[in-house]
Image 1 (cartoon, rainbow, N blue to C red):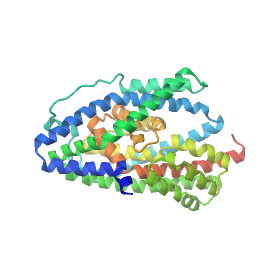
Image 2 (image 1 turned 45 degrees about the vertical axis):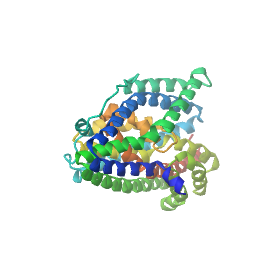
Image 3 (image 1 turned 30 degrees about the vertical axis):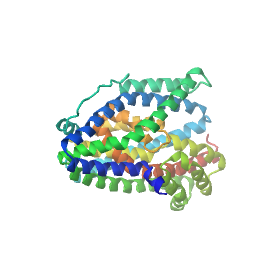
Length: 389
């Protein structure tokens, strides 16, 4: 049990934040410069890897959608995308309305400025082979081209490349993220910003948790109105899947229980067996909520300008890019890092803060994702029974 706890990514991130604060407050500048050196190196490596991650995850993810069951796939994907858009847009309006009341734009200057004060011993430049937007466009073009094809050489190549990228994420990036986050918080603490930053973090997490509960209620109220089922009862029936996802932090690992609970809600096995596994891949309303809310919060903290037009494009792109999220804890934010950089202007250090905030709530977002899959399954099952597909 203890071994399982200390190997959990969320536990490692909390330890990294704590140690980063302690090191930044109490260790000499010479030691903190060591962490800052790692910060710069890993930031450069992450910048190099982001376009490759986009290519490796999005190309096969979109290409594999062509294996679906025709109209049923289109209906399920449209409902899932609509749910994700609703989550993203409603989160933007709520966050931009509530967060300014407790986030002072002067509470924390940019992490980039902190890094300049705490200079690294040396830095290495690792230019990416493609910029982020070029990688996104290329990934969509190849993915859409692969979708109608059967087995092909290029599809096998993209599948192998996906495996390499997932190994990179699981074996290199995710294990090193806690150390990267430690280096960020040591710089923040060294600068004297830690109290204001942590205070804001706690408030953000509290608001987003409440928003997740409201999102699930709305999803099941809509599903209940369409299917004439009791929404509260249907939502409570999904509780075992919700709490399992809290523990596993993986939609994929929760699929068997999600299937069982969806069938308890009256979804036919045929529809459940199609919608639930697909939803675990393409429906990430909870994750989208976290990313949008955290992005608004960090932009307010750092005094960055933003507006609805900027976030509208971001949310629509995020709803597509999240299809590429691998089934590992923290995978969704890694799939989203590229558009945070290209569309919202997040630098490597801001991305690291974003990752820390996201992982702190990873379990709740995953649980909201899979619970929402149950609502989608109810709606699709109603459409199938009416014969409208």
